[in-house]
Length: 202
Image 1 (cartoon, rainbow, N blue to C red):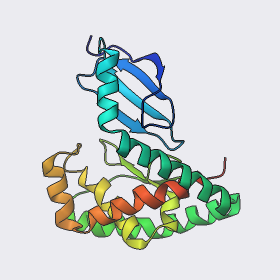
Image 2: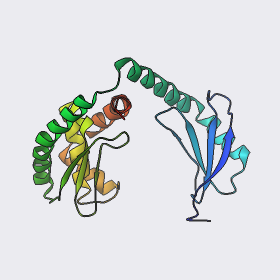
Image 3: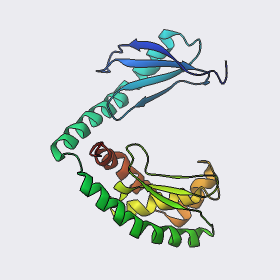
Image 4: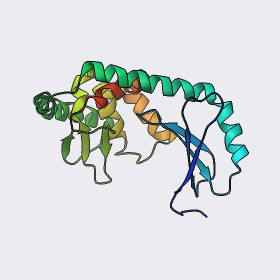
């Protein structure tokens, strides 16, 4: 039933995974699994998938899933120990971002030969940046707490969408051309960025 809205299909306990697994059925064609920031494991399955097929799929990936759950718990503990960013700290990062990011956007836009629209700085818990079809750019103020090269990697990523509004091979070829160190910076965001987002106030 392609295009049908996903429906909640319950939970199950799987050997090797320490938390209940949430099952969502939708019109997708393949099985997929994700672990969110809170350590919740969700499987997205096509309508009509047999329970045993889901269990088999999860058992094959149990080690990797459990590692993600462990990392999520560790990040939560670190964020609690570090404490939330104060409202003043967030305002300060936003002010810094408004001063720093436009210059980095201009630099990479010139390298890529692209134009862009407005630049907006946001306080977000889930996204580092985005680019609309009109070329308007949004960036997370928390990037000011990341290393400068990580900020640049996000800027380059979003500007590459001015050429390719997808994540195709052509998109990544363009991205690696202007920012060869992208993979290392993406790893930093995956491992350390979640900690920053967990410290967001409000």
